[in-house]
Amino acid sequence: MWYNNILETIGNTPLVRLNNITKDVKGTILVKVETTNPGNSIKDRMAVKMIEDAEKAGLLKPGGTIIEGTSGNTGMGLAIAAVIKGYKCIFTTTDKQSKEKIDALRAFGAEVIVCPTNVDPEDPRSYYSVSSRLERETPNSWKANQYDNLSNTQAHYEQTGPEIWKQTEGRITHLIVGVGTGGTISGAGRYLKERNPGIQVWGIDSYGSVFKKYKETGIFDKEEIYPYITEGIGEDFLPKNVDFDVIDLFEKVTDKDAALMTREIARREGIFAGNSAGAAVAGLLQLRERLDSNSVVVIILHDHGSRYMGKMYNEDWLRERGFLKDEKLTAQAILRK
Ligand code: PMP
Image (cartoon, rainbow, N blue to C red; front, side):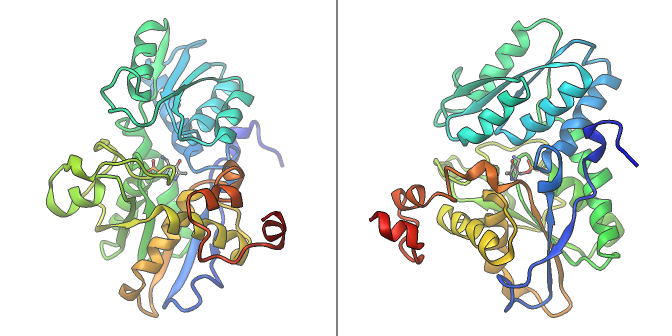
């Protein structure tokens, strides 16, 4: 039995019980480990769906160029699909992103333009603005626009949601997801709520992002916006893919808690996941009082730890940010001091 190409291996990711970190939490705590996708993240699913929908709509033509502002994972999915389908890729990203993520995009032949993080989305230097300009200037190009392209949500409605329903045999009571574009939570959440409207859908947000306040007050508060470290979740605008009606609540997690929990997942569960996985599990622990012994919780782990070797998996990086204070140093780090 073989696959015809690597894209056919996307999806059907494992659902794994957490046994140590959540030992004292009531209910069954499961994580959907999206690192087994070929681009090592959940974003492969929506990347292929966006491309195939654009092909069907005649927006993306043979030999065309795919353009996107991407924090890396969507770019990986698009870059891999572009190799198989014969497209070129140009990505814009921010200087906040891991060097590992940027190098990985280049490994698949994509061109990557790094833009400053701390400018408004409307600023001509922002990665949104640069990608829009490239789309205008590049012949036969198509901008995927993952934030507002609803094929993103649809991919998770068609794949991620049904997989979770099947893997839990319909027993899921809570879905917990870090929210960036909103595609994962909105698509999977909508599917699951259609099957059982009682399922709670909780979004994980960052301090420095607008989602939680907007959900609670309906106000887009610019005061909420400031730079933060956690990658992949939180935004300074409202993407069309965030369906606030599907999401019951947002919980914010600090950069430090997200970083340290990412390490805990590796050390105590043997799962090598990315920064937003740590945020999501830390968010669950903050909300644990709402669970009972019948709860069946599914937490999405969006991407792989290898992209963060120079970040939370590096003790110097943690120390520079004051994140190591409460953590016991490894022997290696103690010797270096
Ligand atoms: N975690 C990581 C590492 C991501 O790259 C993303 C995508 N921005 C998310 C979480 C959030 O997923 P979504 O865009 O589907 O809301």
